[in-house]
Image (tube, rainbow, N blue to C red):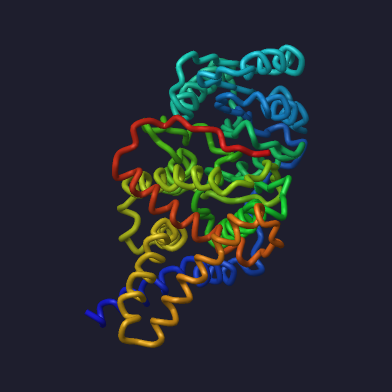
Length: 408
């Protein structure tokens, strides 16, 4: 029994070290000295693709005006830019603000606002908008030589820099490119709360996806806040999907297309500060991740480049909470007979207790900030959310509606 406990401990430790340290280091080595060498559209190229921006919104009155304004500032040929917004049963001022913005800012652009009274969730809204955008494109270019057609799927809370759409679209001159992700940066960071820890994690993920892009053109999923996809690669998102962006891009990878991250296609999103808000979001993402694992499980076993990246970057991360739990339980069992594991067990217990205690007592007791304890509390909480999300998936995902994450 002790040998089995030791095996579980070290296997779990190795899995965590591999997915968070060794695999990123391998991608850095493979990407070192590389750059994108595929063909790209120049800024004034007459063959630039038609871009259809798809956006689902539910009670986004705090950000929808700024988002629509950021789209009016895009330095992209207006005759090749379309906007499709779908209100998913909004009950605040979202509908009025969108209608007002359309009247003021989009009179000369092709813009369409779909008002859905019944709340159904993001995937059904995006499916409807995509079908509408495809129908419009086919009608406009019927009998003509049609340019490439791209979908840019974006969230209402994500603001685009003026060159973002062009920097996404330029890569699609190469027929191998199926999807391009943006570089989302956080704004409004604070010393207290989890915003800086979340930003560090996101920055590390951006770098890793960029290295994957350079190494072999197989970025393991976009961040979802804003990314481009060839319109003819879009498939109706399955019902009750919680992480539709990963599903869409991975389907493109399955079909042999490349998916890359462009660090120059910059967007901004206000940071999350409260642990409970980010925990709820991570739990939902985790449930959707295990949902996608059940759909793409066949790629875990084959020894292919796609399967290797999927297993190394995603699958092992999704089970990170279980690996931590296995390490803690096996060390606790071995602590009765081995000094090394006794030290490890006490260290894990004390580290978690101090980190969470400091985090939750920091504000009431006016404790000084400590980025190391903040990062430990964030890392542990997000891995617990992975376990919680797994249980949510096991119990069954009944709907795909979402609750807007609080971002101040």
